[in-house]
Image 1: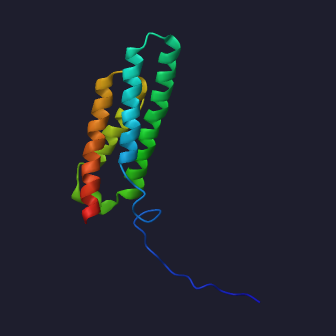
Image 2: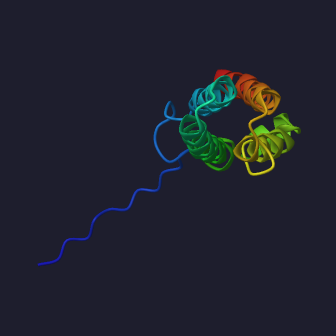
Image 3: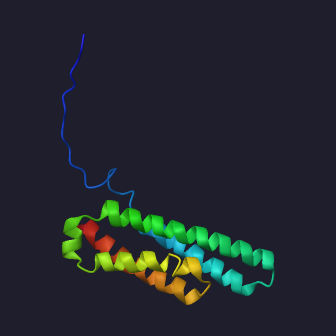
Length: 131
């Protein structure tokens, strides 16, 4: 005996119910990146400095991952129409978290630039949740 299940078509805004996406995740990792840079500069221990760089690079990659999820899974065409600079913000932020940014430097000013971009994205994210 065979049973045929009834198919129901659903349309979801994202992979799971809203509430799992948040730029705060990227910001927390970016703050960790900045802290690693500051600790790197404050230390004279070469082993500690090497560990700081390793963690900074790992966390920089995590920032990119969190931003990519927001960019590709949360934000949809209507958001990009309403916020025409959103693609540019994500592009700049992910580059600031990459090899040409925090992953490739110990310059705290670059971490501050990354945090500023994440804050701009967070403002748009918060506004998008109001709609």
